Image 1 (cartoon, rainbow, N blue to C red):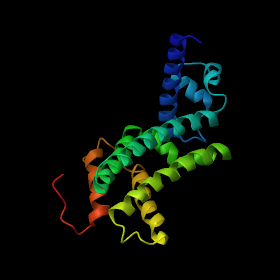
Image 2 (image 1 turned 90 degrees about the vertical axis):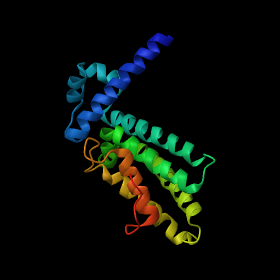
Image 3 (image 1 turned 45 degrees about the horizontal axis):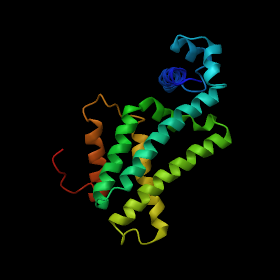
Length: 201
């Protein structure tokens, strides 16, 4: 395959992924059909199957790309030579901004993993576990006394992860609070507590 053909193939694949994510997030994976996706893309079903042999393969490609992008940026942030609290703020901001930008993909990640074959589902779960472990390590750095017991480390990380991931069941970036402000408020709430005086956002 020549470079031009490869670029054209990738461009068409990205178009399908974007159209499919919007459709499936709206209708639900169990309701949306490959014919629905093909029509949304202005293509035939056979053309769609050229890129994705099954609806499950399409779902996996969407959520895998989404989580891979998020995880790469979170790894980068954790490795920065900055104080733990500053990296934590960037971590939350990156996660929230990424989920807001790709809300359709994020909704599918929350709702549709159960439809994937076990091996593909476990691939995504391993990546999510790595995200929570990166978060857990940052929390330990920020407050080693509170996190001295391994018994509480995972619950704290999962509390924060759950707060962030399920926010997008109701949050819309077009609302009164922008994603960056929401991320800052989440970071402040988690680090300083609800009764602390908030900074100016």
